[in-house]
Image (cartoon, rainbow, N blue to C red):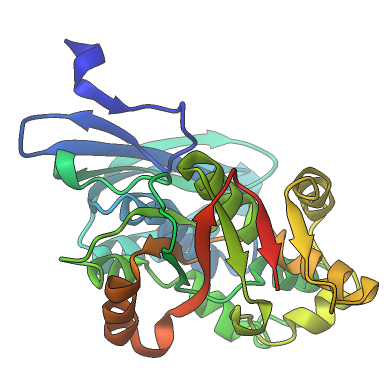
Length: 311
């Protein structure tokens, strides 16, 4: 009974588990938490909630309930925890999600996240596989949150300087999901801890396609190219680059320095990044019209085995 009801578990690196409740409804189940990317506890709460809810949107579903996961030192005081929870609660309310409790532990290193439950029709689940030859690849948020987080930690910028990036991370992927209503989404994921290169490779490899990306149209937050050129990147970026170099190629027009910069960018681990969708050409055009300036077509899929070419 349970094995038949479980439509999708952890075997395909998708964003949420899918459990059939009836012929008309399946539950989407996911959990996510991390350490602060910003100092302000209220913004940390907002960003973390948006990031946690994103997994449901990436599966084409509607989030319904959330439970808080908190690990904070008692020395920080109740005001800090209250601000984190207030930020998370505001984003959940914006999403129409009911927060129904959670669990807290005393921990020296602060962490916050949400366990989220949503629903979707069993036949309308978006997976990170299914992209087809000729599909258009679309991104819905700029890259560079990991780079900006590193610049903040190194005190190269202030949180006022990073306000646009912070607001982007706190923005739900709700609109990006809803804009695809009635369209044929062949594959979808959100761009998070493995960066654009890692998540696109997962999608391409699982779908039996290669992906060609035009770097001149890939949306970036301000100053990302500047920071990436100077190796202002998270420590994990080097690990992702080492892994990704086996399946990434660059056009010959890029000099070594440019390639190094772009590797830092496309392998930048994102926090609360946008959706990455693969749609047939006509539906992609309709989706871009609906999203306006909030989405960009960055490339196409071709029959292959998961290779990424940046041109």
